Length: 130
Image (tube, rainbow, N blue to C red; front, side):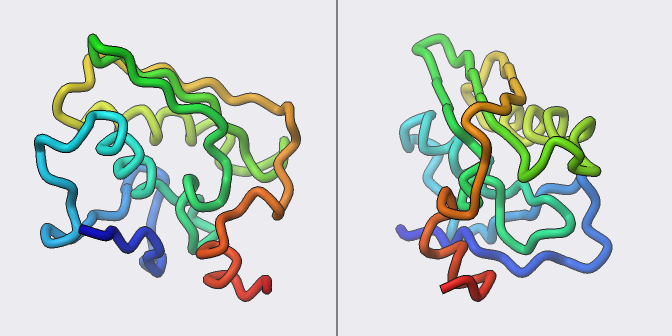
């Protein structure tokens, strides 16, 4: 089942409101935990950008161990990003909601610096950057 990760951002979306994936596009509960964590990451958007953080290339590392402990390293589009303080908590809440996840650690890193070349092709198309 292919998931459509590009969702138009809803008016009034706030950092505490990940976008819901329609039931017909959700991964089955027995899908690998890493895949379900990535699916959860694809529900998190910066309110100013209509592309999820995963397709934007903001997630640098997503490690899931056998105990269900998740470690995420991610960045933001710029150090002065207005959602810098809120984003780690939003990501943490989205991933914690995944069945089988025991704990979540989200670290914001600045190296390497994010640039538009890190976006997926799907993100570039959504933002008309081709």
